[in-house]
Every structure is written in C-alpha cells, then in structure tokens.
Image (cartoon, rainbow, N blue to C red; front, side):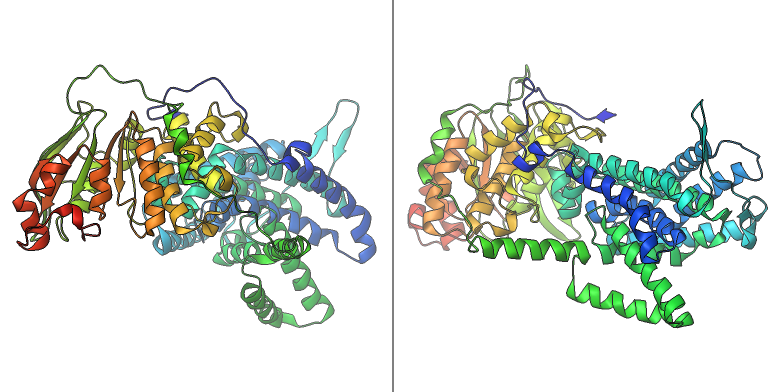
Length: 636
C-alpha cells in the first residue's frame, strides 16, 4: 500500500552494508536455529521442566511483537493482554465449542482476529501520545477483561475459561506428526518462534523498520521529512497485535485450556518487565527476559519454597537489573563487548578531518531533482498571512513571494515573528488568516508531511535529529520519504533494494561534508557537524524549496566560515529562504532580503539597499545610523 507523492527515482542501486552482514547474511538466524535444536538435547539433563521451556517460547513470541511496538517504535502499551486474550479465545472457541478440527488454521484465524482488533484499538489509542497513550491502553485492557468475564462469558467460559483445547497434528501424506505436551510439543513451538523471529528480523531491517526507529527517536522530525507517522504507528500496533494473538492461541494449545488470566493487567505487566529485563529493541530480549523470569519463579517457588513471596524477590531482581543494566541483559552484554573491544583497540576513534573546501562537490547537480512543473510565477506566495495567539499578534497581513532559483534572506529584531512566519510557510502552524500558495497550489492548512512530499521543507533552528542513529541512517530516513512517498508498507523489503537510496544518501553526505562520519552515531558529532546534518536531512528529501532556520546559530567563527561555503555550494540551482542572526553572512548569501518588525514586513530589497535603509537601522540600532554590515552579530 502506498500513498502520497512519490518522486522520480533513478535506476536501482545497491545499499552498502557492513562487511559482516555481507559475508554472513543469515548469521543470527543460523545461531538461533542451532540453539533451538540444542535446547531439548541439553536442558533435560539440567533438570529443566519442558513446560517451563514451552512457556518461555510462548512469552518470547508474545514479546517479539511488543518489542517492535515498544523497543523499535517507542510506544509503551499496557494493553497487550487484550490482544493476547483475543487471539487465544478466538482460536480456543473454534477448537472447542465450534468443533473446528484444524488447530493450525484456528491459530491463524485467532491471529487475524487479534490483528483486526489491534487495528481498531490502535486507531483509538494513537490519538494520544506518551503517558496518555499508555493510560488508554490500560483502560482498553480493563474493558476487555470485563467483557470476557461478563457479556461474553457464554463464549469465553467466564472465570472457567475454555478447557479441552487440542494439540496440533500435521499430516505429511505418508505419516502424521502429532504434538502432544511437554517435550513433544516443543518442536512445534520452536518452529513457530523461529518463523516469528525471522519475520521480525526482516521487518526491523526493512525501510518500515527504519522508520519505526525514526518515530521512536524523534516523531516530529520523522513527520517533517515526509513520513505519515500515524499510519506507521498503527502498522506497528497491528504487528504487535498479530504476534500477541498467535501467542495467545499457542498458550491455549500448550495448556490444553484457555485461561481467563490471559486478559488480566498482570499479563501485560509481566510482558513489559520481561522485555525490560532482557533488553528492549533487540527482539531476543523478551525471550531472555521470560527465561530469567520463569526460571527464577520456578526456582523460588519449587526449590526455595517461598510461596507467594517469590514476587517480592523477583521484584527486587527486576529493580536491580533496571538500575545497573539500563538496557537490559542483552544491552549490558553489548556494552561489555564494546568496552572490551575498545580497550583492545586502545579506545581510539578515527575521525576524518573535514576540509572546508570540500564544498567542491557543490558544482555537481543533485541526483534527484523534481520535475519542474509547467508553472510560471513565484514558487511560493503568501497573501495576507496573519497569526494570532489569543490577544498576541505574532504576524499580521504579510504579503511575501519568492521566485524560483532565488536565495532570499529574512532578518528582524527580537519578537519580529520570523520563526512563526517560517512555521506557517511549512504548515507546522496554521495561519489565523491569509493563504499560502506553493507552485501554484494552495497549501494553506495542509500537514507538514504533505507539504514536504510536495517539495517544501526546512531545517530547524534547534537541531531535530535522530540522535541514537548514525549519520547515514539519519539521511536515509529523509531519503526514504523522497523515494517511497509518505506511506509504504514494504516490510519484507531490504534497505539495499530501495532503488536509488544509496546514491541519494551518499550524495547528500558529500554535499554537507559528512562522508567521513557516515557511520558515527549522531550523539558523538560536534555541534557544527550536527548543524550540517540538520541541513542534510532537509536536502535528502529532494526539496524544490528549502527553508533554513538560523543555520549558523551557535557556531564558532571558523565553523561559520565553513558553513557559509557549504550554503553557497548547495544554493546552486536551488530556491532557498534563510533566517539567521549573522547579517554579514546573510548579506553575503542572499540576493534579496526581507525585514520583519513586529510581525509585519518592514522593507524588502537587495543587501546593499537594506544596509543603507534608515527604517532598518532604526529597527535594529534604535536610530543610531550605522551601516548594518558592521553588525556581524546583530541579534535577531
């Protein structure tokens, strides 16, 4: 499914992958398969109960979907028990009271039912974000629990649940594989878990998985570069619901009984705890967390005979793990490995020196230019644009236009309304009155995602980056919106197979002089590098009109010189509007300058005209008539 305006794309190219993945593309899957095969051969000799191992697999499968939702997309849901119970009870009802004979097909139907319910629940819950989203999911889980015990008790069995759930059989023609209980059922559960993890790995390695991580890191910027984040969040919720429904069905098959406890809040709570213990954002964390949780539970109850006190001890273990292993057990092991590897390498990090003169790449035309529409006139035109916040007037009756290929500067003293004006132009803020036309099309009231898809985007005054991702991944997120449109659920597609992606990313990195830092996490960049990357995200979305909000803010003199060269280079053949404090630099860059004062256009003209304009001098210097060219650091 695809919506939005997709852009012209060049012939397919291959995305460069780490050497280890190119040499061992199925390494993780192979190791997992070997471990699953070894479990029934090793654990019985260690005294492990088969039912405990089977429960770990069911919880691990349940956690895969939750980890995609929480660990990768950043959506903490306490309502997964509702979907777990829905899939389980639909499958159990078919296999018991409806007399449906096909266990595997019943599991599939239960999974589909849970996914459908998850879609509806997601539409409701995702109307809010953060803690409000989490609280809505708690309420929904409680509603499902009540409905299961009361209005639907005739179908669900109420507090008695649904007994008599059969185990699966697979006819092979020459024989039939029967899976009963204990270790006999383990191969079936192991195969289902393996298929579940393989599918999840494909999802998180796909363009959709990359966008999930972008939403987790910075949902506002993910929307601003052109992604329909609400629809992607719904997709993550549906994926998590499908995994929950399948796990719920397997719970009934494993126990021969579908318990009403599947709907309880305690089920959702255990899932969150197990994922946190193992490590979120890893896919394998929930399985490891479930193993720790269930083995400790059996040990504390069975061996130490602690009775109900086992919850107290496990609670303390959980607190200690969270305090000392912020990213769970897998995260702790990963940090230890990186620490040891760093010491072995002398803790050195190679940082490529970035030459300010690397702007030589500027002469090259961008690979992905939009087809220029058959439209004559200003590329952007604002008419009577006003914005009121209650009794405060931020902008009033602004008429403003920019021609194609022009580099326009905007200046003004504090409180002039420049930032609000920029936000209205990119549709981050809706105007109180007036209209905005882009390439002859009225975009007033459109979303920031839609106008980015049309080719109008901006960089931000305060860096809005995906800090835990690498430089390359940051640029790829913006490029994906340019190449695929605002929504495309290609969940099984490799990033390497997105046509033109590597060219778009590499060329953008060259333009902003970050090629040598492509695999560096953004959190490790210097401030000047982050400012260039901020511009790079806007460039990667292939804009026909680029707005830069104070690109020189906070930079040292040397960084400003370098960035001015960069801006000159990327201005070739582009239409740009720049706001900045540094008027000397802005006058050097801009062909025309618009001056705002008290939310209105004060004057407009060439840099030389603005420098000598008495009204501008009055606005900035309180009537002291000096050349504005001498005010290199005039405060905007």
